[in-house]
Image 1 (tube, rainbow, N blue to C red):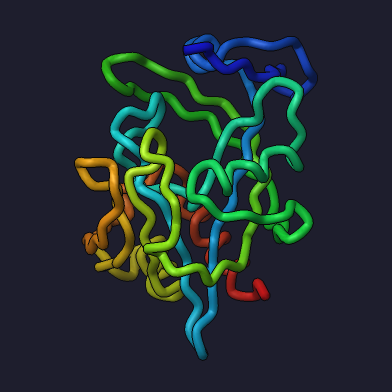
Image 2 (cartoon, rainbow, N blue to C red):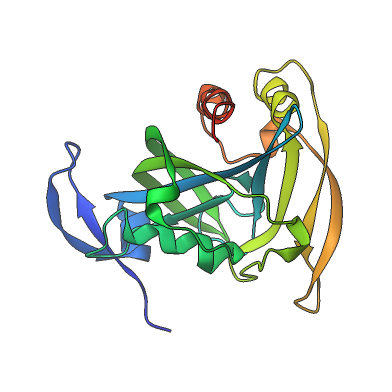
Length: 210
């Protein structure tokens, strides 16, 4: 399998060349990524969807994360990265339909599969309104183990440590590669390690998405 290449940057995000995905994460090169949170409104309630990362991921396996996220391959623009919605969960969306929510700079160190990684990335963050039923999503089994949905205000309470856990419903990849309904209890420490304020600020921004 051919390894993906990323454009890499210095601390000030000046381009310094390209590197493979593994080299980028081994040496801690700065690179760019795309974050997109799916939301929907039902009567007076707002819901947010988030994914469960596969156990085979090279960073933060088995963690809950943004609905859809992905690195920009070498030569790609942020507009190109909207392809991640189709690739990861089977949702077709135009980049122009995405709602800009800001930018995030992360510097994370960890271990996945016995291999150490240094993940330094700058991510453009977006929201997208999507009412497609969860069971109609087409999960990319190599990347996504499941997608779950929670009431936005309850999820915000979780990130603000006003509740310890939350029971959520969703769709998960089954052992035979199909998709099945799933109910799980989630805690804030099960999400990809980030400052809680990132998650809380995104929830607040998603309140006004139309």
